[in-house]
Image (tube, rainbow, N blue to C red):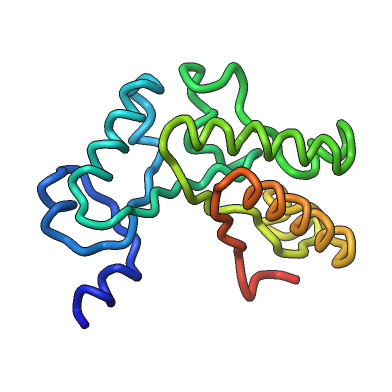
Length: 169
């Protein structure tokens, strides 16, 4: 029973011994995990996490685009950080959001990441703290944004994590 409960937890580890000794279901990576590594080194690190675990791990990251980019903020991984949902929509509507999501998923998969803590599904107004991380303030259009991103992520083999609730909207 304890093992099953542990498997529902996502941890943050720095040494592989703790991965093999724990029964955590996953590992979340932060910007510090990418900062001083090349993509090849990161992929090898993630593979070592998987190898140290007796069960396949969920390997996650917050790569929302805009204000929250843990990977693409580093030029070794991408020439420029991923844009926010609002910027993408202004550039090319839902087709641009779809192509950006596909590119983001390809990057994550190339590193061995299988979970993205995104998209932000909240409905917010410009005065709200989280507004820049959201699609905007309209429930119907935000719902279409969420469906588009989630569908693209699932098609690419990346598990989405819808957030933040209850949130602002």
